[in-house]
Image (cartoon, rainbow, N blue to C red):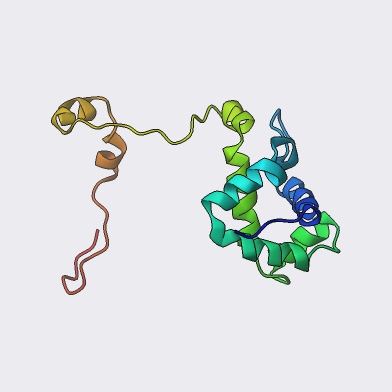
Length: 145
């Protein structure tokens, strides 16, 4: 696993706070811990992001945070998607952020296949039924809706 050096974590902290500043009672990315323990969690979950992240942070290390984000967004330095995934992913892994959002995280929901009637009465499928069928035609059939 690629380690993220403290100096690059500092670069990420600045970028992260430009992407996710504190607002409306929500913590900034650094207040949530994105460039610290949450970065380690993201890299553990997505080790494929570590090396590209180091590359991107090294490329913008001499920029101030706002300039770095502007360059990344403009594509002058490739890797905006990598940084955005790491920052947003880490932010949403923060227990504080999850609590503020009322997001419990991913939960396993057991579906009883014999309980389809109740599911229909609960309205779970109402938006789908109201929308009607939409799909891409199977090649060669020429049908679509």
